Length: 151
Image 1 (cartoon, rainbow, N blue to C red):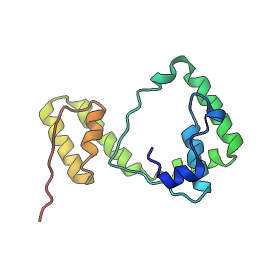
Image 2 (cartoon, rainbow, N blue to C red; image 1 turned 120 degrees about the vertical axis):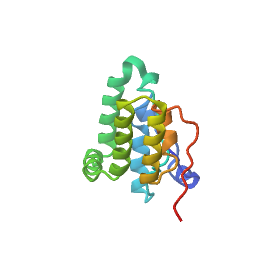
Image 3 (cartoon, one colour; image 1 turned 180 degrees about the vertical axis):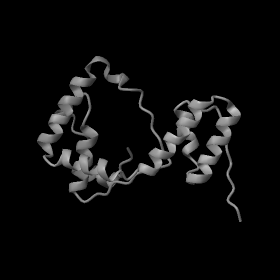
């Protein structure tokens, strides 16, 4: 999550007192930012891979439950906003592009196939950095793809 300095200055840091070790503090910050008039922007050519809650080990489920309860207490409209976001699905095209690449990669692990599939995906979706996202997920070992637009 990238936060502009003026937003951070206005709202302050994440609420460690309410959320403790984690799960919910970033959502709380986003809710506060929305209510203060800040806008959220999806950067579709950037991907951050989280290693499945590794930092919370056995406490994950309990912390998630506590975090959600705290969010609902602080922001009664939180769950409705989440439902609305899921229904609208603004990142659908990006998710489908990744799903398509994942299916192609799982069908064949050959490097040549992966290069061609990724190149076609990149050209079709027009997100040159999506390759980095796929490589970060372990789908390919390609170091560089250059796509030139047709004149």
